[in-house]
Image 1: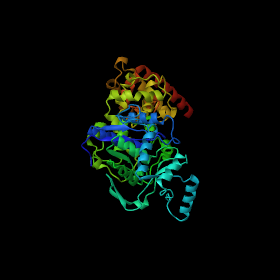
Image 2: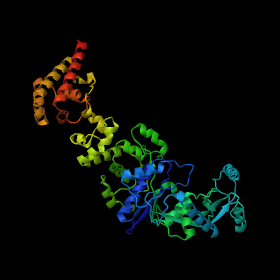
Image 3: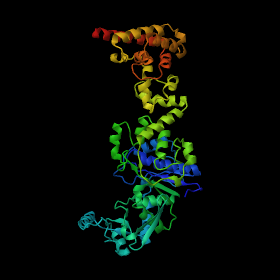
Image 4: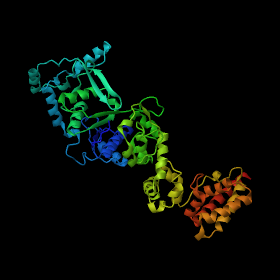
Length: 503
């Protein structure tokens, strides 16, 4: 059920790598629910696994979230009434609540050594049993366990799972899930180094921070009953649990994983948000794309701005079925959102891509006249310098053979180039506009008895250095008469050299 009350939701990543599509989708749904209900979106860093901690990952996660436009209300860098917002700063809080579970009989100290546990698992596997704790320390008298702890004996704290009956948990997408308690393990809540595991830490934090909806990946479904047991052991009201659909590989076969990233990168794709920005995708398009991988508004609406998503998103329309990651759809959405941008805004966003492509002096003012020519022709922002970089080069270097028009040889092409140069040279410099260059050039096409593509193709390659460019006559106007004639002269010399070789 979607709440009409303000929702308090949290995105709680581990700083062990870059933000990927799965995490971004979770964060987006959290953000949409919070904004829609006038609630709060909280960023919490789950960094208790110090072995997997990567320096700088937290900052990179924050940067990617902000690039997507998912600004949080409370978090490590902002503070808030329920801090600290890094789990590594909340160790004593978890120890306090773990002790409560021990004192109430819902958890116990376990003194089994790693060697004993390894031998136990080996024997269970030999018997064909799933690995599980055998309960050796469950029934140690509390006083004895306490004395051993106080004496400094290494130990963990395990949840004392009931061995009888069942537990029914409710997932918003899948309904009631009933599990027999005897199939559940006595999971470790606190490790021997005193650090709480996710099972305890996240439940304590969600309760203390007033989280109303826990939106997370389906990988938590197997331990979902444990988490509900922990809530109930404390007597706390449970949040609304939402386990999102799995992402499949583009083929639809197999679950998407971080290990697939290198393969996608070779194809100019990625599952990491940082890469998508570098590859020229708009945050608006990425949000649109991932929102529809697990949710739909109806059976035909596909274009959503952030405001649209805030207004139309609903938990009820989330789907539990797996969603294949379709990069063609991302390209489709990126094209739509590029075309929806105001020209000035697109020019502003293109500047860093021109700088990265080797045009460090390009400004918004420089790009303003070019944007209308390329806005409908690019799918990603990084394509713009490839299509329009020639505007900012002093000279271009056409491939000589590309100057030869289709169905013509070099000698015939050089004659066409000379005539085209004459026509363009006759247009006054202060009137070098599409309105004044296109009509005489089309008249030349008719006079020569050729196709427009043959004549215009030679001019295009001569002036831009490439076979594909923005509209030709608008391009000539921006390049200017002097540079156009200069480049035509160079192309004519190239064609003359080719013609001599073939004589």
